[in-house]
Each structure stands twice: as structure tokens, then as C-alpha cells.
Length: 346
Image 1 (cartoon, rainbow, N blue to C red):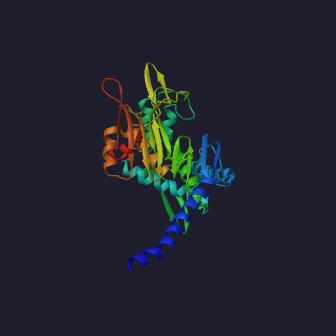
Image 2 (cartoon, rainbow, N blue to C red):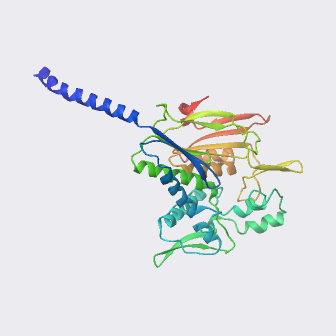
Image 3 (cartoon, rainbow, N blue to C red):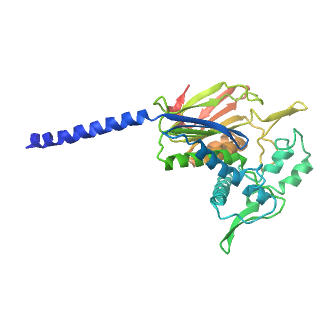
């Protein structure tokens, strides 16, 4: 009786095996598309398995993010808020802005203000924005610090209208440390909604991956060795990570810096002190469930330094980090989350 039952199950088993092989062959026959272009003042690239070329759709999604968060788009929501407007349009673009605003607010709280989207005026004062390298006086720094602090800006809903209220009208918002990651997420979400499972999206170095690469292997993403390279000419890698179904972002002080009177000033500004950070951490790479979170935490960790960053990682098991730092002898060393061990390709 038992053998007879197995006999009747055999055709079903063969049908399932054949169906699975057919699906695999069909999936392998679908080509990978490759697109690239410019957005947010940087380069984006997209590799995804699809019969269709979706570059127009990808750039439309990125443009929505630009319309919400770009400092250089005079009609963007963030630019209008910085000019003194309060009302956030009840549109998909407006919802994007509020989504990022609340994400930034939450990460600011989690990092005790190390991540702060109001820090822009200090970044500019130290010569990393619209001004060239300069060193503000302590009085200038103290004056600007009165306009810095994520707690000084809040989202309120009054009579079903979304408003952004600033404690001082001179306060400005700058989401550049989270916008690229968010834009990467937006494109990834669009591809998923279209049923695309295998892709890699990269915007200005911030990456989201899913499934497998064209070589049928996990996506492999390099971490750049942090050498002083303001022109971004060096492509030497510190390591390569197997990154699948994760987002990855890197922040470092090895590209955007200047020397004055023999002293190096890096672009990472501590919102608490109002000054460029001075510690041993050279580069922070973060892997997270989405790229906006990875982007923001990578920036925060560069502000905090390695030891304080490790404390935060203990409370956030969903995050993995790869830190490159300078030891007491000035030599480069690395530290990474134990959960990252099996993803490292030396």
C-alpha cells in the first residue's frame, strides 16, 4: 500500500522538478539591463534583470526625490522650507519629504544629535559648501550653533495641513547625508513593485542589492581604501563585501578636506562642537535594511568615532559596520561587526 502511494506521487514530483527547471531556464534567459546618468550632482547606475529598459521610469523616481530634497532645485520642498514657507504639499513628493524628515529625526535621537539635518550652515562656514576652505572664528561658530539642532524643527499637522515649524526662521535644512540613500531605496522599491528580483542600484556610492548578479553570484561591492584623494582618482579597495538583499553606504573624510596652516580640516562637522571631527575613524561603511538608514548612520558614525559607534551598534542588531581607522602608529586597521565576517572577501 505504501509503495502504491509513492508510485502515484512520482508523477507529481517529476512535474514539480520539470516546472522548476523550466522557470530557472526562463529566468536565465531574461537579460540584465544597465542604465546610468546624473542626479543630485552625482552619478547613478542601475543593473537589473528585466525584459524592459526602465531608465525613463528610474529617472522619474529619482526626479521625485530631487523635487523633495534637493538644495539646488529652487522649487524643491526643502528649498521652499529654507526660504520660509511652512506648508508641505499633500503630494507624493511632499510625502517623500516628510518620510525622510521623520527618518532623520529618529536617527538624530538614536545618535544623540550626531546626525543632524540642520548642520548645513556650519558645513558652509568651514568651507565645505558654497564657500571655499575657510576657518571661522570661535565667535562665528558659537553664533551659528544657535541655529543648529534637530530639536529646533518640527512637523505639525494643523487643520489637516502638514507644516514644518522652525524655532528661528534662519534655520535651514540639508538632507544631503540621507537623500542619496533614500533615492536608491525609491528606485529599488519601484523595481520590486514591477516584480524584478535581481538588481543593484547605486547613487553616488550608496547601494541597494537584491537577488543575484548577472554572473549568478551574490553582488560583490568594494569598500574603497581611505587615502587622501580629493580628486577621487584612486580606486584601490580595502575589501570586497558580498552584499545581497541589503543596502550599503560609506562615509569618510578622505575625499572632502583641505589643509590650512599645516592642519587638515575634514568635511564631517560635529553638530555639538560646531567643528570638524578629530578622531581616528577614517571610513565608516554601514549595511542596513534600507539605504537611507545606512547613509545616515554612516555619517553619524563618522561624527561619533569608532568607540561610540560600537555602542550604538550593540543596540541595533539590524545594522552591520565595517570601520577603517588609524591606530596609534598612524597605520590603517579595520574593525567590523561579527555578523559581517561571512560577507568579507579579502
